[in-house]
Image (cartoon, rainbow, N blue to C red; front, side, top):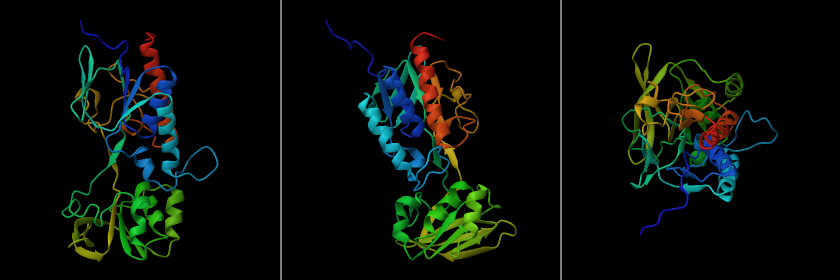
Length: 310
């Protein structure tokens, strides 16, 4: 006669190893549940992990994204979270939840916390993918040192673009900030970038093509007002034109037209067994503290579900 486990090894599946997911998994395990965390990229902390300095924290001190993520990951493991470094390919919501990971293995949790975050939008122009890792980078903190004394371009007028430009200013000879529209970054960032002598603003422009041979040599730009094209010579390109939610593995019934998971601040979705936290959730406020708080809130809600309090 066959045997079966005394307990489901994945009572709760947490999808995403960003700060929301790490906080959710850690708190869920502290509530005494068996938790499996999936992170396919190996970048714990999500996009926050690429930041050399995290703003808006309610406690003193200077912290990089990794300073926040790694202790959370280590503590999550200590309290029993099982970490699997595979992406999730599909979540099916029948009578029983089925979560299929990138290796093809199927998991049968009682609840799912979706904390898969967001990914940087690509420029979608010729040369971008060709030169990824050879002049095109999505992390100034990681790769900025390769461009010491060189000219680089950052694409984007929002918080992400200006933050990346500020990260590159001490290293690069010149930073071109290519903006399709006026700056939309927070006032603090805008004031800081305006005072940098080695920053050149390229207004009303969009990237048409990333140029190069073995590595990046420049950008072809288009003026969005009159269509005129021009080129600038740069050795590095850092696109930060916004983010898009990572939710393609979920049923369409849980997603909004933008791809976000439809869930309120209580993290509850249309399916009472599924919860959403952080940047993947429609209505997320955008700060690190909110992401972590939502992760804990989702864990509390899932805990109540498993305890039969809904």
